[in-house]
Image (cartoon, rainbow, N blue to C red; front, side):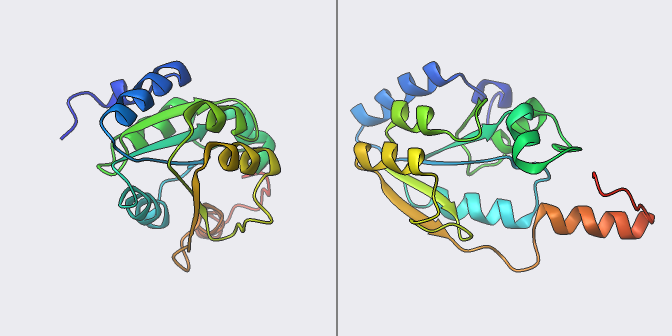
Length: 171
């Protein structure tokens, strides 16, 4: 059990120092990123499977501002600190870093992960070109993990709207 979940939410600078320590110990760092707005089984399994690929898992979490740009008005439903806290509470997640852009190429270039994981809705061709370039320059292995059918934040929101008879499309 983690002593202090809040200490798992770190800055990029702290993550780079941690990364250097992992490298000195010959440990492999796995990195993934996303909004992780409403944590569900699909997320948990994705993170669990990602963590098994290496010795430590760092999750780059989109800030509120970048989540809003990527997901639209009304999102995120949970603020960035809450999302990072919930992720950091998972046994499979060692550290989280909140980042403020719509892509994380700067963070990936600084961290130089051994392994980078993205969801199965992406391919090497559809991966953000700046992120892909940062990963290729770092020599990172890029992996794609399939989604569990029926589990998505959009599905949860739509189900809740139907249950509550909400017609507002912004949620």
